[in-house]
Length: 80
Image (cartoon, rainbow, N blue to C red):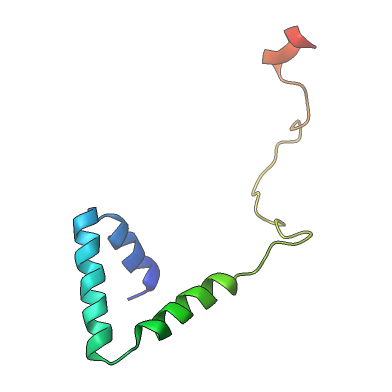
């Protein structure tokens, strides 16, 4: 199962249910002898490994832009 699907399912749960899921995950980590510091290190390195936006980083984000995008809006004619 993909992690994105699991994350979507967790988002549907209440706060109490999320705490139960967290407790279950912690018990699995203990059973398999995975240290909490190792998990914390992986979580923090994942956050810092993200690509930082640079010049041209938003290229292709916008799917469509109208030809008259820069044209004045009708609603603001009274102010011009």
